[in-house]
Length: 109
View: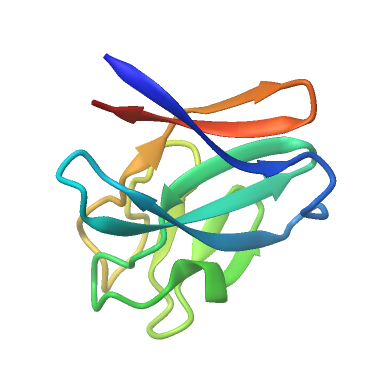
């Protein structure tokens, strides 16, 4: 079962921008998520690089890829796949749902 969590509104992020948000996961631990706007398409991924735990929302957007600001590891925004070293493990992705002007991510319960 999934639950929806509102994480923003359309218009808060310009094209190519991202922001860090904090959510509670299924174990009630706080987790950082990066919300990204690519030309009106929104993506949500874990904000923590799988290489050395840097904040991906402080990195760069390169097409549909985010680059970690610390060592340059790159991740696919759609799948979370690690695309370049030093990262070898993917980041978690979250389904994004738009309802009216509200942006939600879906979380497992």
